[in-house]
Length: 76
Image 1 (cartoon, rainbow, N blue to C red):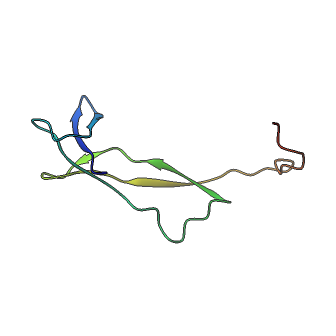
Image 2 (image 1 turned 180 degrees about the vertical axis):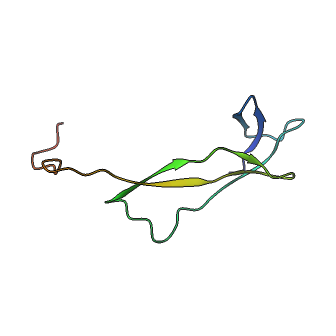
Image 3 (image 1 turned 90 degrees about the horizontal axis):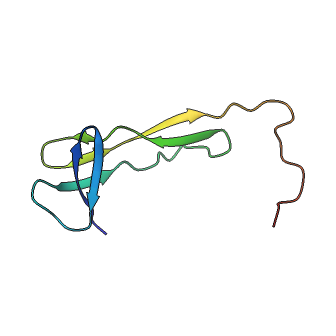
């Protein structure tokens, strides 16, 4: 479903309808080489590109330390 947005005070306000001043929002795709075992993704700051608002992604490396491996059962 297409969403529309406007950036106000650095925040992206979203709507399912194109309101006055709102533009189509495009989201970056997750890169094909993304490794969910060693990386995590956060949304980048929305950018007004003129006719659309683009929301990119930032990829970060997980900090894994000894003993972090889960070896028990999942709680129910």
